[in-house]
Image 1 (cartoon, one colour):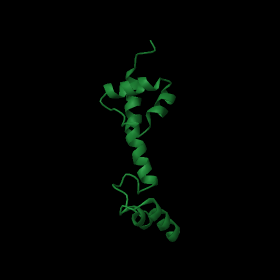
Image 2 (image 1 turned 120 degrees about the vertical axis):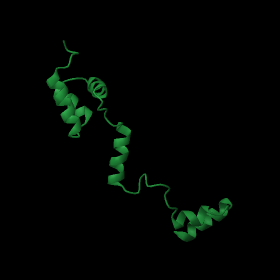
Image 3 (image 1 turned 180 degrees about the vertical axis):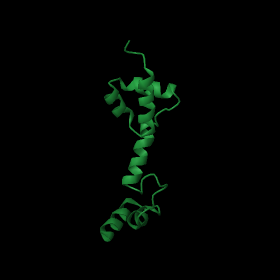
Image 4 (image 1 turned 90 degrees about the vertical axis):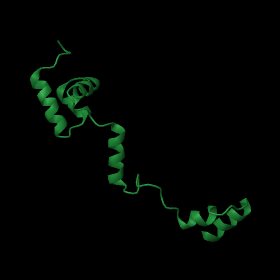
Length: 98
């Protein structure tokens, strides 16, 4: 039956999860639906991390300033917007700073 898992398949799944293989790659290699892989992993007590969290971590590696807390305001932005001004004053500030 297509829905049953052999002990060998479950051992392979656990080994691949522990090796850090993504759920999508495991699904392709084991020729099973992605949802099936994720559900079986969760049933075995080895759930995959949320994909959004993984993406967030990858983005931190590529761009360390992302997710590092509040961003610093540049001098350019700070000079224009730190004090309430009229539209004309903001335009003048832009013209003179560029």
